[in-house]
Image 1: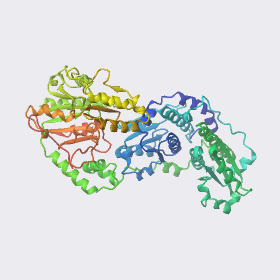
Image 2: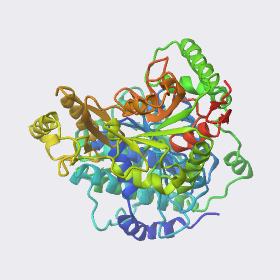
Image 3: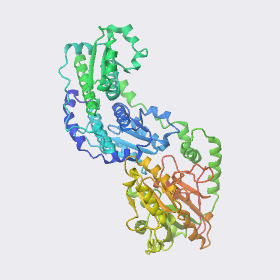
Image 4: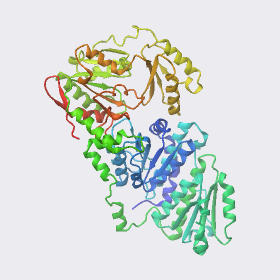
Length: 634
């Protein structure tokens, strides 16, 4: 099994050049969207080293990340909704990675990215199709990774460095056109004698830490030797006693960046002179030092293999080892997760107390059960939907949208009233005419621009921007934005065409989270306007605008708000569906409010956006003409 390790190292320049040219749009976009959140970076085997690389790069960019194995994920059961997660996998086929993805998707982190160094891997088939889920795949120039996953590790490191440079613009992450692999040859007899020791204590810190972790992994996976990992200062807390007791069988490998030279000098200077040391110092002002650290590790592994007569890329794995690798253990089989799959209220409660660390779960459960019973015992005559994230996902698969609108056309054919409340303008009318039968264009009501203008789908005169003038409060918002340097360059849609209903400010740039908070605070101080937030923008609208204005149309025809069930994806406070879902009968397909008497999400674990919408629609049960009920069991 495996590949010759030395030949594998000879391919690194090809691997490096390939990753320099690879498309990193998905990676960079994910980081831009979620850099304001803490990250979890997950990997097993060689991919755990990649997870540690991400943790280091994230810290250097100003973010926060924690690397962990799939099994360690089980520590995170309540706080996942306030995190973004990257799952790293080389081939996308081992069970631990697949189970980790399934576990993560059911816990519904704010963002989830699977990074696979193989095209069309099995894990790709499992990906959930929603606004929070992204998939990044990269086809390496050399299709099959070796046993120690060197090719996928280097590819991942290059791609991540490029993504962080794109995110921050910092020269720290800028990669050179070439890397001189194998620069740590030749190896002296003294070095070989050190590698022959029973135990190596590897001192590390900062830029060398990911490579040190990878060194331990590779030595263990090929049985090259025993390694103890410890940073320079933790070594001082009793770890040095090993040297006192076993000095004849132990050596030191020191891996330090230039910023740690002083502590390295002092530490090594205090060691007994008969303790052998391999010292590796590296420049840490750029990521060049990260690559040099890994090159050092690769060469150390190669030399240790030659010394022991082992090819690190082609180990002889015993039968019990193969059985251990294929051992069936699924982290998704926890009782709490099993219960959520069977009980919609249990999952709804998990979504509801999002971000609340000390809550009375039993009180939430009682409230959720009461709300579900209220829904399933009610006869409805219509449905009001949000559009983006509820009926439509521009990044999703077309099949999901087709299935949703097939359901809507069936509802319309049975006399069910349909309304759509959206932050968009006429573009939504054009899109809806493609998917809703022409027979029903005069039956579907649209509230454009967050309820600023209401018309039928068949009425091409709406939204009519000439019917009213731009509120003076909009100009005041623009004046205040221009006074704030970090906001003044943001793109604002609606100014040029003098849209009186809404100005939209797109937030697709680095630091967007802080900008969004600043913007929402600024708009809150201007009388006559309010701001509502989506995942990628802030909409500035008149105080009189609201998605709930759509009910006024139906009231003129004799319907009440209680005749409708409402669906949206942004029901949290400040979300653009918050007011719409603050109704007696409202279902979220994603985020919910913290209020216990409105806006619950009873979809199955992992179902978000269109998948959740379709789930609800499939549980509508027809009654008399123009009526239906919700058939969910809880």
